[in-house]
Image 1 (tube, helix red, strand yellow):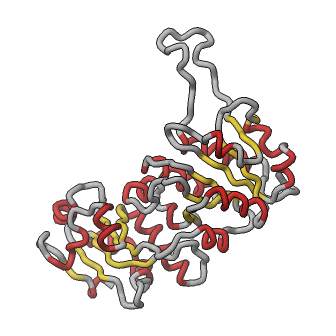
Image 2 (cartoon, one colour):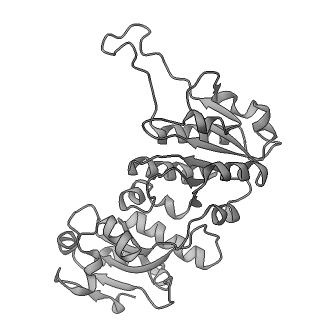
Image 3 (spheres, one colour):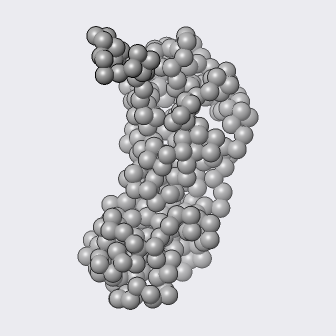
Amino acid sequence: MLQSATCITDTTDARVAHFRAVRDGDLRGRDGLFCVESPRVIRRFLHALVASRRGAIAASPLSLRALLLTPAVAESLGELLGRARECTEDGTSAALYLAESSVMSQLAGYKMHMGALALGVRPASTSFDQLLAVLPPHHHLLIPWGVVHTDNIGAIFRNAGSFANAGVLLAGGSSDPLNRKAIRISSGRVFSVPWGESHDLAGDLVRLRDEFGFAIVAAEESEGATPIEELCTLPTVARARRVAVILGSEGDGVTAELRAQCDATCVIAMGDPHQPTNRLLESNDRPSLNVAVASALFLHRLRSAGGHSRTEC
């Protein structure tokens, strides 16, 4: 396997130009690529590539362009490395470059790669219809609306992959899940969680309800909101086959306009930091949860309730 690899000792070598000072904006805009880093995450990426070529259904098919690894990491990937190298756009074998960790750090401009970098090709399309065509019938949906922090998007995907019961529909200008940091924070779950993008959320919510049997729920604190513990007892949710949870932006949450399009709004009860009075806090300082934490609580609630069909939820 490693006999076909190319050893890199010079950081100016033109063959590894794409790995030089890898910046997401450059890769995405100039070359239609994305970067994956660290042995664990690259293993998950390569496994997803091989599984999809063997018939596992992926919402947004990916392919491999090139790998830059230390010899030790390349050896640790074993046969998976050879199988994954055939998962390219044109069927040729993906380039495999070997370099020492110090050379890789000089080339990439940072040290967090842990001896493993890979370049993948972005999918040509990540549409709503593609996602719903492959979303398993028992899966729910998380819909981040205007969630722009890369850390949050990565964590939402990690939650969806860990609970293994949801896809992700990005909306409202949410951050790119194939950003290098998002991939790393997701621990590579962006490659196993079905996902797509909505460019008309109002219309897509109607379709989710009418065509696909979803109940639409907003995760937001508002007057009259239902406690999350009662989510699956709501008549509209109990009648639905599955649930789509809208997660609002870091600043404004789920807007009133969006909530008006939902079947219900659910709130996660939190403690009152002012009882007993805490003088370290302003009187109008309200408790709140990070959006990714909220997504995990909703996924846990749906799994705990057995919410995979109208007979179980």
